[in-house]
Image (cartoon, rainbow, N blue to C red; front, side, top):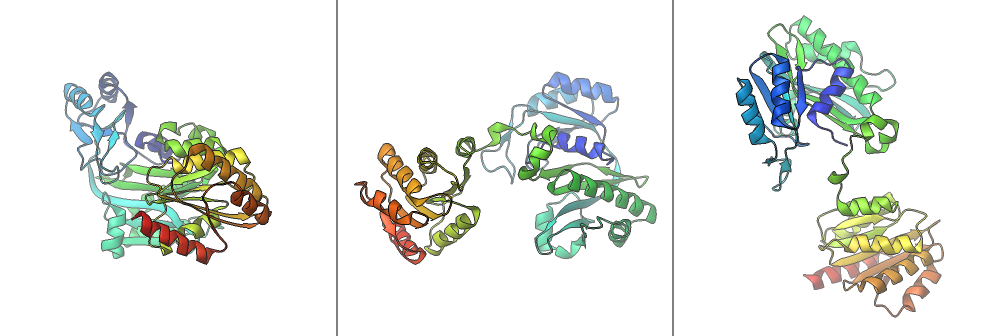
Length: 389
C-alpha cells in the first residue's frame, strides 16, 4: 500500500528521521495558515499524489510570500497532474504539503528493499540523489552501492558507515547518515515494508541529513498488524472489479490482454498465464476462486471476469482438491446461462469429482470447449485467439 508524502514524513519523524518542518492542507486558506505558522520564507508547495515525477510536471512550486503561497495553492488544488508514473489520465491533486525550503549542498539516495536474489533486505545508497533510481540502475549501475543485510543481525553501524564513507562524505556526515539509515531499517522491519526510500536525502551546509522526500510501501498482507496504517487505505483507489471480488472473498487481478482466466490457487494462476502467453496471447485478468468457493461464488466470479470488455476468450483451469470440480462446473454452467455469454469458454477440469463435473458441462446444453490436459488447452486457446483476431 502506498501513502502520501506527508504521511510518509509522519512515519519518518516517528522513527527519528529528520524532515523539513511543514503541514498538509486541503484548501488555500489552510495552506496560508500553515505558511504563517511556519514563519519563514520561501516555502515549498508539494502536490500530494501517489506517484513520482511531480516536479517535472509542475506539481512542486516555491512561494516567497503568503499571498503567493495562497495563489499557488488555488492553482494546484483540484488540478490533474500527469507524470511518467500516473499514465495519461493523471491524478487529481486534493491536498498539498507546505514545507520550509532547506538550503543544502548535496543530494543522496538511500533506500532499503528486499533483494530477491539473496532473499534478504539490502541497503542501497547513491551519491546521485533526486533522480529516477530505476533509470540510474539501468544506465549507470555502478553509481548505486548495495549492502546486503543479514536479518538475523539487522543493519550494522559499520555496514552503513562503510557505504557512506565510500561516497566520499566527511566522517561526521557519514556517521549521521549511517545513524539515519539504521532508523530507516527499523521502520522497514517494524512496519512490514516491501521497500522504503529517501530521495533526495539532503546534506545541509552544516552536514546534517534531512529527508526532503520519501516513499514507504507496506506489504498489504501485513496491514492487519498495523490498524492505524490500514485506516489510511483509500477504497476509491481499488479497481471496481477487484473490490467486488474482494467483497466475495475472491482474488481478482486486472491485466491488459484478451484471455480471461478463472483458476484456483496462486501457483496455478501463474502457470495458466504462462500457458496463455505460449499461445501468443496475453491474459486479460485472472480470478482465483480459492479452495472453498460455492456454486454462487463461482457464478459471481464468472460475472466479474467477463465484466472486463477486453475478454475475448475465457479459460477455466481448475485442479480440484477441497474445491470439487462438480461445484465449479455447476457454477460455470449457471453463470454462462444467466449471463448469456458469447465468448468461447475453454475448460480444463482435473482432480476431485472431475467426471461428475464433466457430466454437468456435457449435459448443460451449453457450448463449452472441454480439454483433457494442458497441451490441448494451449492448442485450443491458440485456435480461438487466431479466430478472434
